[in-house]
Length: 341
Image (cartoon, rainbow, N blue to C red; front, side, top):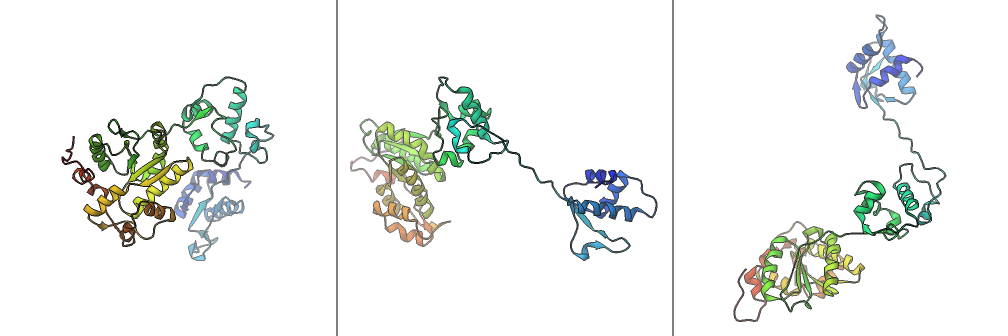
């Protein structure tokens, strides 16, 4: 691409499909062409750009203008330049990052900033901070360290938050304690907000659970991180759960159960509430159905709720909201039912 007019032509060419009429307009902008030479000049410029692999032209003969010589493409597409990846060369990594020595890191790798911070703070007494605050120290961006935590080195334990003198702060979850004397009873997590509100008001008087926590619907697995400190505060190893009687509702509980098992805790479905749901609720079509996963089936079996399996297989569901204050009252043996606060 030696001719300067070809370079100027390329500069005016957008990174998209450009049709022949626009090609003529660009040609008129970059150079003055003698009469009768326009077609030949445009074809010459396009050939030079194709040779340099800077533009693409149609492969089909039907997409070329053959009304005169030389033939011209109906359109061209300017190629985007390939980014040339640069690497950090001859890095002497701090010992905490020795797992990086066997590979090559891009020049914009976030590990370079971690390395610089570790070298700068070596030997200093550091105050432990939440992850987002430490992320500001290292990157000037409160979210950057969260992104790095998803990478292989953290997942495989090659580096830990302790090395960065920081700790993860789980998102707080709504919860309400039961009345005095209920502290040793299991806590209960409710999937949906309406039923959470109802059960909280009921439990304030009934005291059937040590506390009632809100599970944030489909986000229950991530809410577990906020529930674990609550369980430890009460000295509990087991959490009871209540959600919709449908396949997805039990799978949500299963995903949370796996997270709790990883930290030595147990999740079980609360059979009392699911039996109330079976007794008083009405079935409706579900958006999900079929066979439960192995883990979800284990939760069902442990709670003795096998009768729910047929509901899932028939693509049906029972919404947890069918368990209201009146239904909850049936759990009590007292002669005088409770009233909503």
